[in-house]
Length: 182
Image (cartoon, rainbow, N blue to C red; front, side, top):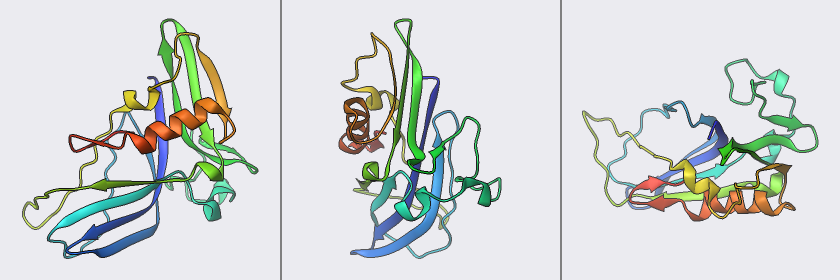
């Protein structure tokens, strides 16, 4: 895998008997080659139950002009680009690489791909009053059931079978041994 980037947004944390903290305005661009760390603020959380987030950019933001954001914002223009165009909006995920000498590219775009993912926690531990939520991704799972041997270049939406397989890999293989499989 030479490139693996994806957006997560609309994060919420369920804690202490069903209480919810919502971070609706938070958008994160995750890059597989960089540890992503986001500070969500100071809250009293004793028992973390789950983290819910959406893969992609919600529709109200997906079709806005990327040049209107400050350069440090996840939705500002990037290189390589994560914005596909006005009609499709942002690439929700971009997965590229080489397998068996063949190049593959899988880019998922379109509002219909906006998917909720929930990660359930059985136990959490705070250190020095700080709770850190670690979500570790196994990126090879994103390639499950995709024919990499022949290579492909797919930039599409919910009408493309490879994109649907890729997005289903994101949402269906989400938790294994306390690791989020993205």
